[in-house]
Length: 359
Image (cartoon, rainbow, N blue to C red; front, side):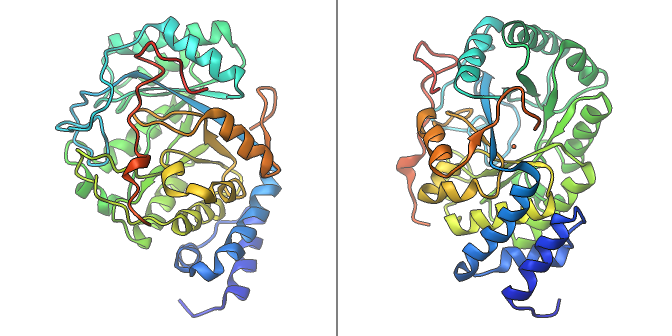
């Protein structure tokens, strides 16, 4: 790759993305390699792409953790993993009406998509029926809301059943590059994950797939995962930043800076100009006071809490969106440092508790 100045490379990359053309691997690597001195130039260039395809709309999504803890898989980043000693909430499957109640509250607070999640290797057929009941309960009370389901690896016919039940999308993140995958998980493979995304897409579910960063990956790994996602052609891409739970193998990984997170988001915007890019788990911990800049790159975010960690209050999310000059996308609109262990707060409110949800 020949050396080019920032004044030469960013306009060329932005022009290619604005035209809908694929940005090359070398150019994506160049975005990640920019210095902190160039950060605002990178954000400005990627922001032009974001505004062309999504204007100033921000799509809000809300997670409902259908069951918490006791997952048999050994993903090193996950607080629900086999062997985790993180002090998270643990509970069995919640009832459909409880999930629907949280969904209604989230929709009232501005959410356009409800994400139903249950950690595990994959669902049994009885789990699919349980989730189908939950989807129906949500759709009965809020018919216009999008429902995305995330249950792990799918067996034959399960994606079709979810689609028949009214689910709109299926999430299954690739998480890291194929070459890096065995370092973070040994109980399933990268190919297992790509096969599930493909099966969901074939069944007519909108494919949602993204990654987690902050696990020791290189710039090459980050671009590799972006290119692997490009092959799968998802409709929405969650960009997660590692929440380093104590009690998990990656609990000590605090190498991400807010500036690096913004460069990663900018790279994804260039790689996926017209696709929903969602700033997802870990944004409060990793971006901190620079969160508003992420809105110039991502057009979607999660409202409130995550699966096992607390997010910032929903009213603060809505205020941040308004203060940055953006608007919340309505249901009827077309459509994603220093160690701060004090910021990793296990969730003890919302689903599975009697404490009101963070909406």
